[in-house]
Image (tube, rainbow, N blue to C red; front, side):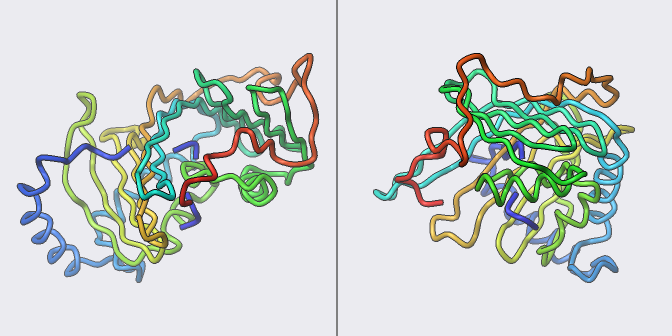
Length: 268
């Protein structure tokens, strides 16, 4: 799994001790039902994940809101949670817009099939680069050229199942739960570099509603969480949605505007 858009785990807290024995039993069962994928994913988890990713890949246009919490660790060892909200619009095969909302200094990203732009809205600085002809290539290039982490973006690829499971070493169905009054299926996966969990809406629209990622390559194992809501799966976007328009007093810069970067005192 690539370092995972856009970008909240269920608050287990006081329930952790009560559910631990059941998780152990499920792990034993999952091992006995490993799917043919060769990744140690149980048949139940594999089926649910494929259903979700196939549905996402089939959507030609959609819009979704996300509320993310990114845990960073200061040099002092203190853990800090950075919260953000975004709205992302997608039109396959080559249109993408993602914008942080309600936050001073928020980032905005535009991709129109030919170029991509990252803007720091607090000061009007922006960077525009030529872009690949599809969303997959644009996401890859944005990560490299702009040096940004975009965990939730793994859900936007044309083949999200392959991206999500590329470093997975095991996966299981945790159970059927409720998120904001809606029945969901809870899956958990182990990986070489990250462990992650996902909660998928039950029914005809198996959309992801909760996503949690723990980075194991850092001593502090920081967690990234994102809650996905207000899904609109058949949107007719005006062409202007994906076209960047420079702000009146904006300034074009060659590199990613560092004033919008995460704190440098944090372990990343």
